[in-house]
Length: 442
Image 1 (cartoon, rainbow, N blue to C red):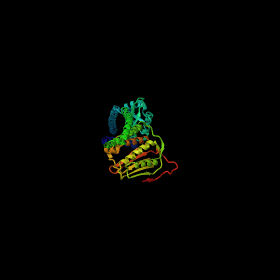
Image 2 (image 1 turned 90 degrees about the vertical axis):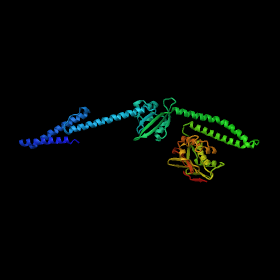
Image 3 (image 1 turned 60 degrees about the horizontal axis):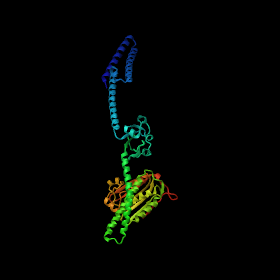
Image 4 (image 1 turned 30 degrees about the horizontal axis):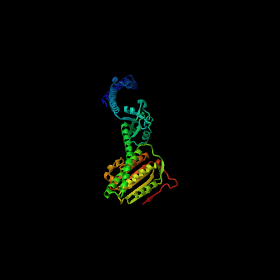
């Protein structure tokens, strides 16, 4: 604070009042003289204020008025604040230009959305990939411009961890990956990538696997038939019995792998949602239990627990395949004195089918990769038990078609629990039966 200016103003005002008082005493009107002095002082301050306001309205710092006392100090402070504001404004503008230039140079598209999914800004790559038309599209909702149903469901679903792949609306065989990243106060950042090459390679891989699987099925059938004939032929040298049985076992294993590959290719060939056929899960559980008990080697206890009789809406063959894979895996990796429990229950989150075993368990570092095709925790043990490494990949694709998810909870040496979580729209109450059943079959 400029105390000198205020002191000078006070001294001048005091001197003026003293002179006015003296003159007023001389002429016999002291109060009138003081009032006149104060009025003149107020008028001068009013003029200084008008000059200050006129200068502020002109917004021209180079034409700052020269005012006496505190007014001059006030003008100097305003000039300093203005210049500081201009400095920070220019700095922010430079940073914003640098940010826009860097995002414009990115090979990926960037679209900034507000909480209502309205477009605030996008770079040139996003405009090229999504067909945006510059500033005329600012303020429009993004689903009005990107109308692919997959992206609309992804945007409204609120689950943005995994990007969605859509076909470009440009008409060409172009595929785009879109992922939304929330940030700030409800704002959304949409990242757009051209994944046409990856999509074509994936399509080629699927076609190769499907074609190779179908081509291998016929020769394997012939080989398995001849091996079966040779193993039942009494004239074969007994020394060849062991090798022939091993060859037959490996042929059966190869046939199982081919069948799983064909099933997986069939599931991958269609992204359509599964049908809504009613499936009696309780009856399916009983059938799966009988299948396990019919195996030459099986756990000592195979229990089923039905906490609900709600029907599951889906494709029965696919659901049977997925559930059977989970139960067979549990039976394979559970010792003879162990147990397996198959459970079905319903709560406010939907329907849940779980398989719990007391087997060898799985180390935590392997769990994220279990649904990859041909991934094995213990390759040697999987080959010994006849595993193809495709069962959980089939389970994952079946659940995806039914809008469901797979969760895995396992501790090495203590057992595992595989749980399928189905949404509520995939459930229907059973007809003419109580809404909940609790059963346990030993």
